[in-house]
Amino acid sequence: MTITPRLVRWGGFVGSIATAGTAYLGGAGFERVPSVNPLTLLSGQRGALLPILWVLGTALLIAAWWTGRHVVPSTRWVLVTAGLWFLPVLPFLPLGSADVYSYACQGYVQQAGGDPYAGGVGEAGCPWLSSVASSWVDSPAPYGPLFLVLAARVVAFAGDSLAGVVAGLRIVAVAGVALLAACLPSLARRCGADPARTTWTVLACPLVLVHLVSGAHNDALMIALIVAGLALAAARPAPAGLVAAGAVPRQAALVAAGALLGLAVGVKATAVVVVPFAVLAALAPLPPALSVALPPAPGRRNLRELWPPTASIGGGLLLTTVLLAVVSGRGAGWVAGLLRSGDSVTWGSPSTAVGLTVEFATGLDAVPVTRLVGVLLLAVILVLLWWRAFRRGDALGGAGLALAATVLCAPVFHPWYATWPLAVLAATRPENRCLLGLCAFAATLTTPAGYNWALYTRLPGAFVVTLALVVIVVVAVRRRRDRRVVA
View 1 (cartoon, rainbow, N blue to C red):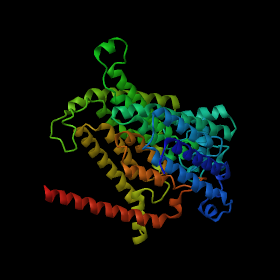
View 2: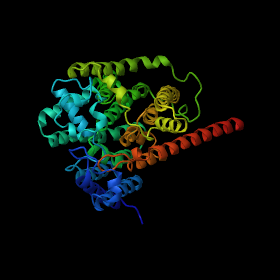
View 3: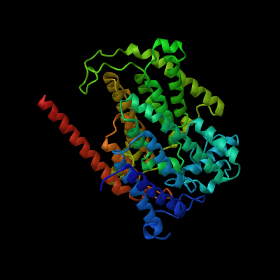
View 4: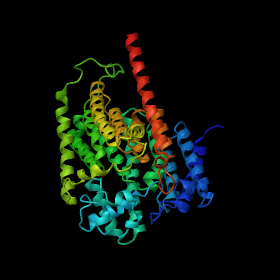
């Protein structure tokens, strides 16, 4: 069968309709009860139609996304197709997660004058507490002040209507997806990539439809602001004549880029890992002869070149962070909330999987230790990635890899986290099959109501992930040894 744009568009649309059917039959409801967990889904206790639609919808969306990247005719076609796919899920319950209800309660606490960072929503009298997952009832908000302010505004507008609050939070998420769609072509052009293909790889990914649009995750806004900030930082300076004629001066553009990244950090602190790479992106590119895959000789860049963009981008970020702290009235209290963001224990996080395996083998509580090792390893990897990007002039690729490393080394992995590196690497490494495969696999990890399969396969999954890590390390060591022998 020949794959055509028409077949991709309408095949994915059928998948979206099937997925919307699962939201109607068994999405994340207003009452948090174990009504659609893996047991009820597989046994057909809620009817056979629900699992059939979920499998069919997921399969069609993944197939259309995977094959469609080879036939996209234009960016406009991508935007129309992605928008068409998003429409069926908008009127129904959230899919893949119940986090939107914790957003609602955190917004309620902020709107009522309480402090979402001081404790869980269970202590603040939120009227929608029965909708919130138990893991978030006693946990402080781990999100930045910008998102809390937005959630509070949604609550103020919707009043006592939980449906209205969910709709408002979904509008915020869709606005983030729209900003992402607007900025992706620009980022692709900065990287010399095809804007249509880059936009398709991100927007048509099933994770975006299920978790960002339907599930209304605030990650949509965070990654949109990251892409916007990186694209602005990487923009080449305008000629002097254009600046005099009214073009934005380079320094002002870098301050604006820093402000956008500051807003991204104001949604989720994770965004801070791309800031050092944005500084590199602001530097003039290396000459083509020097931008090669081989390690460059020392001295091709001078660290003193970093001071002007660091001052501009850092100034914009710092100013935005201070303003958000003042406007929200919460200061830096959100940092404490990050300490409780790792309550979920599944094999989705490699460091957690290793800890579970060690715990099973020895009986020791190894998960906190292996998670700490993962965080320390992430710090080392980020430094090495930055230095590599500095030497090779691959700032945007480094930013995408930094987000990927953050996802893999973090104490917790949720499927929608895979959209973080996807949003940047789609422009810098569009044919990275490991990343695309991870996104396709992640799209299958949750049930319609948001229960994660990793919770029901904790030990077997931990063993598999640990074994895979051992194999990867052994293969990497052997390849490095072989290269040394050849050299």
